[in-house]
Amino acid sequence: MTHASIFQINISQGGVPKLAVRSAEVTELGLVGDTHNNTKVHGGPKRALCLYSLERILALQAEGHPIFAGSTGENLTLCLL
View 1 (cartoon, rainbow, N blue to C red):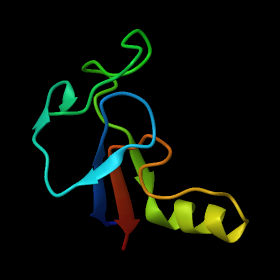
View 2 (view 1 turned 60 degrees about the vertical axis):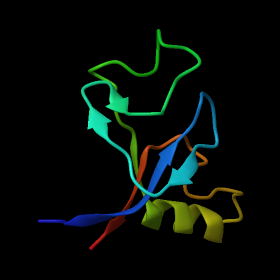
View 3 (view 1 turned 30 degrees about the vertical axis):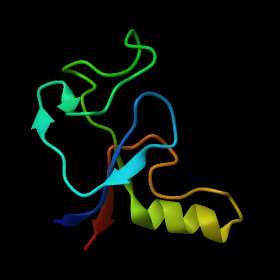
């Protein structure tokens, strides 16, 4: 079984990158303070949170991609243990 911890919590007022916040409240519709520009394809109870792994971000950085925590629009950047 793989375990993960939260590396970073990210929100935005729509669009990317999402920026780091110290804490956030999770509701049925996602993180309080996180909004979406196009609610037809983003957000809602079936798409409330987006998760991405720090390990994948680091691997993409090693390949030369300009990626960082929050840049893919993820709400939670996870660190796998």
